[in-house]
Length: 111
Image (spheres, rainbow, N blue to C red):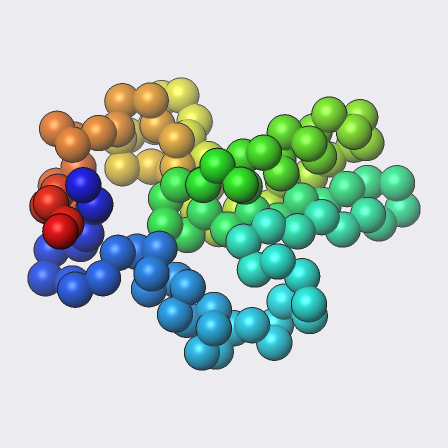
């Protein structure tokens, strides 16, 4: 099963991959487009692309590895992270989000 936006022919991930390849890749200066770490004056700046309102397993493993280093860390993301007290439509990672609360997604079978 795969999630797609209503009326779109591609997944959010495939659209992001297409834009990275066609237009954005030079901006990453050789770094991974979905995750990168930059150490500046003893602080690690960790950039993770969550523009699809989620992170993938590779990004999660990367994050966990970076956090375990013990270096002070600043997390940079495209979509703000969930904050208690905010509405269901705010941020990434709301534990109450799902098919019942998301009016913009439809699930379809792929062959």
